[in-house]
Length: 366
Image 1 (tube, helix red, strand yellow):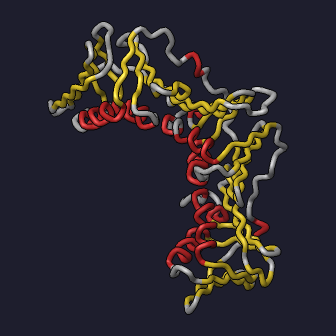
Image 2: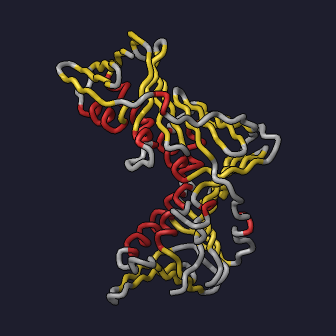
Image 3: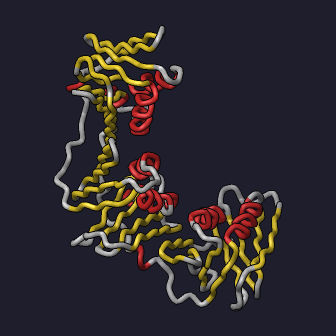
């Protein structure tokens, strides 16, 4: 292998795949990136055996070849080279020589044949979205995913496809986030899959927010996402996601409407003196007023009062303040609505101008 490529293009390609490479691997080969030069392009592939990202980039190919090179070392070398530089990669036996100007680096490599690959499964369902649509679906729900929960199916994001809508849903058992895109999808059979947490975070990082098409291909145990010059392949989480629609409160008899940014700022200030472990906040509602109170084990207290639209009976309820802040951050409009029923019933938060995206927060005892 002997190729030449602008430093910026190589660095961009490496940054696309480097997120898959774990710093601590069970197999040494997983710390490498597979480099395959053919015709006028270089294909870079990284995998952790569950997730694989492949990026194609144009190069001047003097001699084709394949090798597995240390991913982070190669990335750090490229990042340290000056902008506008040209980089040459030359493979000689088991050494990859990286040259740029007067700089030269010789990296140990592993045989390309040892590099594992996620084989593409036969896709049964196909969906095309714009990058903006997919990115928003992920952004508005991913924060509610569980982390290392024994209920492994919660450590990911539900992707639900129907003929007239696409939904993403995430829950950690204490809150739930649901985003919905209403449009004709062409899906004939209702489909539900659970995307792993790492896959969701990589997609959110890699997908641009523009109008470029993103193609999703789903099989029973795998998802493949094709972007411009980039392909992500991931195993799916096996298991049954909870019946999330049963969790969304209905027939609530108390409605709060308020300025999203004003209430969010008041909650953020009050959160400074909340219990660092439990993050509890007390909301006291009366006609036209929301009173926010927090305290911590040091007997420090915070109180905020915000004007809201509320005409129901007086109500006092406790929530995790971080969950409320996350929900308000995920809303785009200036006004939010919170539906409540009683101190021991979950609250429902959504954008006053668009109720397609919904956020459920369980109450806390304070």
